[in-house]
Length: 100
Image 1 (cartoon, rainbow, N blue to C red):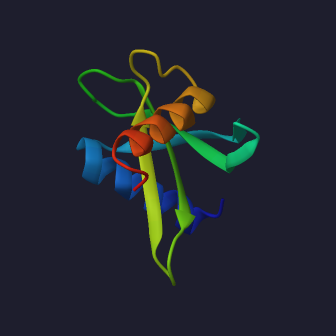
Image 2 (cartoon, rainbow, N blue to C red):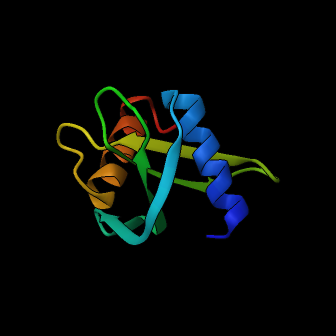
């Protein structure tokens, strides 16, 4: 991901979780469910600055209609321990909300 994309993810983390974040690494993730690829892309791993409960966050985005983007930010907490489990948690959350 380019610097502009990473900056947009940092802003999404700040907006969603209220803290600054520093990019640590980019992790490729390909998640397949029932034979269908549900995510194939890069997940950015960020270190959270002064967050009360999480030291890391995982973030990614994808293009939706036109020039719009859908952003995901998932804290490293509970069962979410890495980029793969962050993607799985986001997919499960979307499924519970009717696939939004």
